[in-house]
Amino acid sequence: MTRFKGAFVAIVTPFTDGKIDEQELIDLIEFQIAGGTHGIVACGTTGESATMSHEEHHRVVELTIKTVNGRVPVVAGSGSNSTSESIALTGHAKEAGADGALVITPYYNKPSQEGLYRHFKAVAEAVDIPIILYNVPSRTGVNMLPATVARCARIPNIVGIKEATGDLNQVSEVIRLCPDDFTVLSGDDFTALATVAIGGKGVISVTSNVAPADMAGMMEAALADDMAKARELHYKLFPLIQAMFIDTNPVPAKTTLALMGKIKGANPRMPICEMSAETVEKMKQVISAYGLI
Image 1 (cartoon, rainbow, N blue to C red):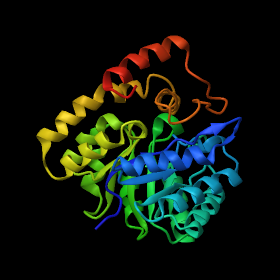
Image 2: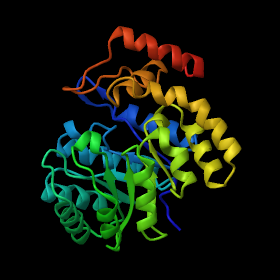
Image 3: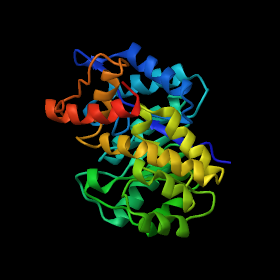
Image 4: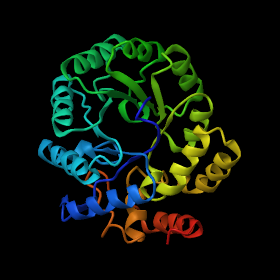
């Protein structure tokens, strides 16, 4: 029985004056758990891990695990475009007590499919922790093909994948080729329901940052085969999901949280910058209609 199912939030990392705002992070975690989120992913793309130092990365993972205190599973983002760095970050995730590690395909290097397989095999063999692969070609410049995922799935502690191609053809092929106990999670909120409908187990969600209860409710309904309720929530969430990607993730999510009074400001780290006033106004209309502000 997998612990990695339902709606996992790819939680944002709040910054104040350029530093991690630990109290805001604690408060966001409590907001998530109160909303029924099924798990928390720290230091993912949405958490701006790419612009964190190793010390900051370690601190966010440790603080998240401490705050959650076993109430829901915690998955630590621990990937890199360097295999040795991925092993080190994944090793820290295990030492800190994470329930799993989310390991992205190496970005920028553009490894071959064989290179991808060897990368994940090396990480999995070095650190005995449940590993979820993370395939997001729009961010990394490389697409891990279903046949490569299936090879990785034969490695005992590689237990699942966050599939963020937005391509249900590819998701279907991954599910078809992999063992039944291999967990496929949507990495795109707009395909969350569809992914579960074809055999996936849930989503690692950006939108959960601002609407945890509805995203968790949609996944619970879908996993229970209550498709009428799941569809209703999908279409309720849909304008909000679109708004969360009106600008580079996680800027819309952080801007919304600031407008909701959950954090003091969006404060993304450069080279990501705040949204234009015009875009904020467009987003405000959506989140106001949703009832978030």
